[in-house]
Amino acid sequence: MSMHTSHRRRFGVTSAGLLGLAVLAIVLPFGLNAGQLTTATFVLIAAIGALGLNVLTGYTGQISLGHAFFLAVGAYTAGVLGGNDHLTALIWLPAAGVVAALCGALVGPTALRLRGLYLAIVTIGLVFIGQHIWFNVPAISGGPGGRSFPAVAFGPFDFSAGQQLTIGGLVIDHNGLYYYLALIILAAAMLFVWNLVRGRPGRAMQAVRDREIAAAIMGVDLARTKMSAFVISSFLTGVSGALYASYLSFATPGQWSVLLSVQYVAAIIVGGIGTVWGALLGSIVIFALPAVLQSLIPQSSSGGLPIDDLTSIAYGVLIIVFFVLEPHGIVGLGRRVASLWSRIGLRPGKGGGLSQEAQSIENRSEATWAG
Amino acid sequence: MTPSTTPMLEVRDLALRFGSVTAFEDLTFDVGRGELFAVIGPNGAGKTSLFNVLSRAYVPTAGSVRFDGADLLRLRVSALAGAGVARTFQNLGLFGELTVLENVLIGRHHLMRSGTLRSGLWLGYARREERRHRAAAMEALEFAGIGRHAHVPTGTLPFGIQKRVEIARALAMEPKLMLLDEPVAGMSVAEREEITALVRRLHHERDLTLLLVEHDMGMVMRIAQRVLVLDFGRIIAIGTPAEVQRDERVIRAYLGEELEPALAEAPR
Ligand SMILES: Nc1ncnc2c1ncn2[C@@H]1O[C@H](COP(=O)(O)OP(=O)(O)OP(=O)(O)O)[C@@H](O)[C@H]1O
Ligand SMILES: [Mg+2]
Image (cartoon, rainbow over all chains, first blue to last red; front, side, top):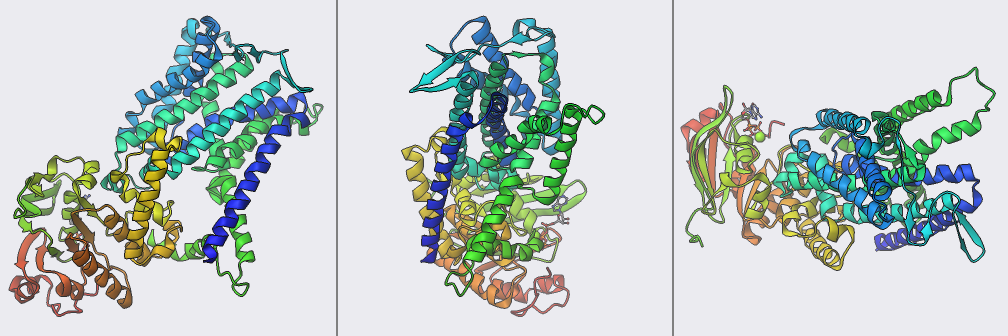
């Protein structure tokens, strides 16, 4: 059947694309200056957290604005275990995920009682409670003045500023080391989530998102499903927060504000709600934006708006544009282009007939009335 | 184990009220093993509400339900699938963003075991389990005649196909009792014939007890073994299709509409 060959061809194209992307990601640091590499590293670190948010909000439909809280929990776990107790990153990095996941497990049950906006509001509350703790418990956070965070070090491999690794003539500096570490963790996390959402637990999450009652009647345990979404999400977010703080090397309690949560929500909206790649694509747009604007706009134009305000406006515009025009974000745009492409390539007469995606687009107009 | 003579479903004095609105009351009836049992009645008679109680979506105000000899009302909603009850929805209960195959696989959720770690790490167990259940889900899709739509996002399909996806999903759950809420509503004559044949095959080939809610009297009278007639939430008749069609109260409830086959074009 032609369906098989087209499936196989798509598989080939996908593998080739992934390979190309992997190569690009690996050589990228050698083509960037220090400032750009720093931005790229922050993007990758943030993408791990955005992926976590996409599991919870995108795939399971639980709207959360509490992301800043879980990032902070991860960061301060790293700070306390790595900085105060001088434990190795092999311990504090996973521990940051685990402690955040435990917090997620504590918050999870509220999602069983609250839905939609109510859950969003409660999770904002979490950020405020967190900030109260961060400002008032210096042993964790260093108090209002902030604290320093440990650099990643695995035995002899030290990621501190000034350190570098030389492999066969290639020099990888502090920024590069963080870049590759974040890249590896992100790739592993994306693979995990990819498997998850194509398997039994991820299907259950999406069913809960689309129709909770119907999902329960099909045998999906709502409590369990929401709980595991919270746990997976906050684990990834905790790891992201720990890496972020470690790379920053210093953070104040004020940084873990609702605004940070909003940035992550913006990232998954722009990149693609409920998609694995959307977390990365959205993070590129949202977290590289300030640096890009900074480099585009000359320093001298002091009469204009400050970069921060420009960035906020750009976030707002992006969120609105994507919500209204393409709810599936950049990934959705890509899918449209791909299905348009296969529609052109498989015109009847050329022997193909419509591809399934093209067919489903055809059917979309018919199906709207069915709700 | 329960002797095979116990009815599949024993409903006793069942009532459901929403504040002052009574959806139904005093419902007492049995559904035998392997029976194709229809529930009919005018709009608002309480048919869907009855299904909602039987699938544990609503908690009844009074009464009891025994399913396969055990107290159905002690089960949690999500335990129902495992106990052997499957249903379809009048207004579709599909997961629009998932593909047709994935929707049917959700029906097999309770038959699968892979959790977060086994699936996320894509371990051998999860892979094998997934392959096995995909094959079973495909089989259910083929049974319902919609195998070729397996990989299409469900929400983009026409209503008639989506209704079949619901039946395939319910079948894939491997239930003992299947509740079908208006499977042919909103369909063309040709589609109605196909679904009628499909329900018949479900009944004959799959060892199922079927509870069918339907406005299409032609269909009901042709395939049901017994019919229960609800009006304003009360049972006004129960019996074979022939008995029910002759019943005075039934004729009156349908307000002069003739209870001949082909009566009642479903009013939606
Ligand atoms: N969640 C609810 N809250 C309040 N009233 C309800 C609810 N669900 C059903 N009802 C009421 O219960 C009664 C029975 O409704 P139900 O949907 O069971 O009727 P039905 O027999 O399925 O009708 P139809 O043939 O139109 O599908 C109606 O009066 C309806 O308004
Ligand atoms: Mg109804």
